[in-house]
Image (cartoon, rainbow, N blue to C red; front, side, top):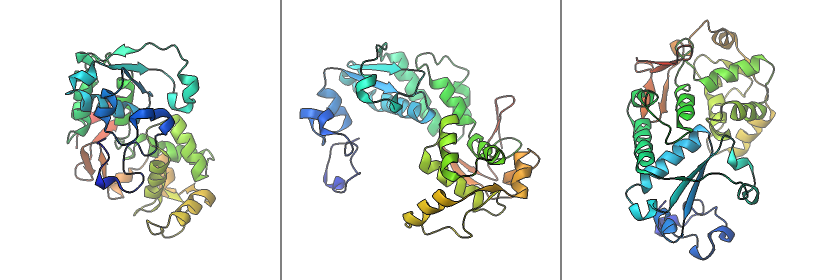
Length: 282
């Protein structure tokens, strides 16, 4: 979110590269976030309720917190619907309350952002027990994120497990799966969902089948797109047993991924108990 410099020669390297000059006006597209806010009379932060959008919100508030002259211009707009699916001209007409960005909201945002970056999920879980009313959508977002930890019985996160359930119900096209998962869970975008599908197919003991025998080179985007467009996925026998909550994916496959600042491995596998909504330590 810094001003444009020599490191931003290529397109898509500066945070305003995709911003229309119609919206930035005389401010231009070369400024950093703080300067952009400084040159505005007021700044409204509109945040979708989806988990990633709530993470972006608390991160932005944490970044801007030291700049008190900018904070004085800020207000926060929250809704129960996804703002991003509406055209800007339409949502701009909504009569939504703008909440002042108080010290209480800034403190909670910094707390939440640092909790998500912590080396264990414990600070995020502890945050659920605190008053989060200053950022109304934060609690639901934290729960959705915690649900993506490996499940206590299956070793799969909520989106991974829902993938198996949808395929068992006949939703076999990868792109349709991604759309449905995005609608139901809303934690991962389409690119991240495609990586989740790859991880469930190309592993030691696959739970899904239907992709080509070998994954294409990372830079072969056309082959990757074709694979996700044309394939039909199905559960393996092992996948059916995991879907039935009879076997644990992590006991048959190596695990190495990140949940925020937490590195998850088979030896250090933090889990989420969906039934009791509790964190299970390794």
